[in-house]
Length: 467
Length: 57
Image 1 (cartoon, rainbow over the protein chains, first blue to last red):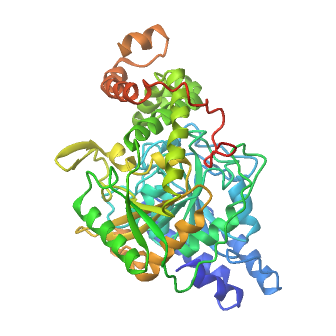
Image 2: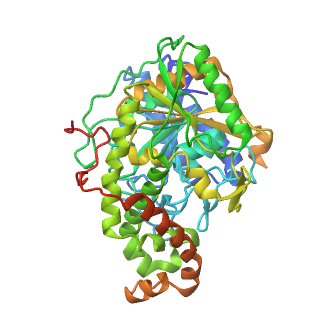
Image 3: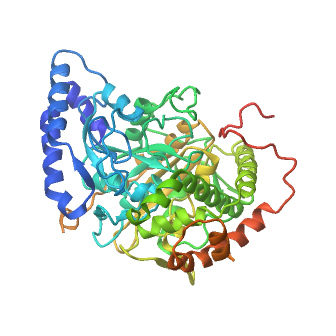
């Protein structure tokens, strides 16, 4: 169910937040043993929050569309009095004394926190095959990864173990799991949502993002989460664009850019056909598609990787030296690699970053959004380290991040929307990105696509999720 | 080369790990040289990052 379907019934007193929370907690009890989407389930606090919401609504104090709606938070958002592990053995028993800004805002909106969702260790990876808390499994096929690092959130989302969820995205960690799990995921503009109280990874790349069952839902959630926060030095004061989306959207006069270079190279064939079909759907709604070239995009993939290696290694340097045995092999390997990045290279990478933003801005003078696949493949198997694409063997992590990570460097808003399924029944994601702070164009295009298709309504078969 | 650098700088990276990451570092180094060994003197240093390049022409 979507927030758009649930909220009016809650507001009208036709649906009880207590019953909704209880039903969702039952779903967690049924499916979490198989999927391992949650690290911590907050059963009693959630029921108490739901009872509070019900009392408030019954007495005429309706807070808005998230009031009484149950959600999951990636377990790197600080929650006061509730352990927050960051998926790490080092923080296994860490209990924050305050809430993250996003958690504060959702509490003010009356949303009901169900629990803390699993993630790749320290949010540094895309598999969610976590050595300390076990692998999170993809509800569409439990032998496969959900993507990451926010894979617990998307596994919970796809399996109906929450109505919406919070994630974070440093190199694709919202969009990759959205694509692999067949849910809608939004990485808003850098600075749009406060990162206060969120475990960092790459200071100039980290974004808070979120997931929903429709584009309209992620727009609603963005409205609750966005806004300046003096506690986060990246926080931006730019006003939020209008987020109401038209009931019967038309895209007449809307210009979409279709990259001629890079984004359609080395794809699983079914991914390419689904995304090409999605572009045709957008054109059928009136959008004008224009082929574009994104200059030097391969350079910016390298630069984004370099920036993240350096920032993450700087952040975790002390932990790597003192707690190496408590860090998983894949994460330790990345942290070790980052120690070799030269300061001059890091700074020159940041200089070139501005070229990327400027070249994207020139493109956004011609088109409102750019559309591309989110990931070149569908969800790989748990433990699969390489993929074969167009006759080449590619590292699974690098393939999964290939089409998304540069957009963290640019800081622009980017959405992943389900746009089809491959022959094995695995979801495919369409990525839509736009100019900084123009979330509206991204959401309008995604919403219009959704209104014309049914992909976002598909859910994993219960048998697959419960295996 | 990477092993020597790690030792000289006291990075305390286990031998097996060095063997694992050295080929990755070789490829990364080659990629980084390709994209950064250019004249960047005309580009302002990016002390803070803002995605809208505020204040720039």
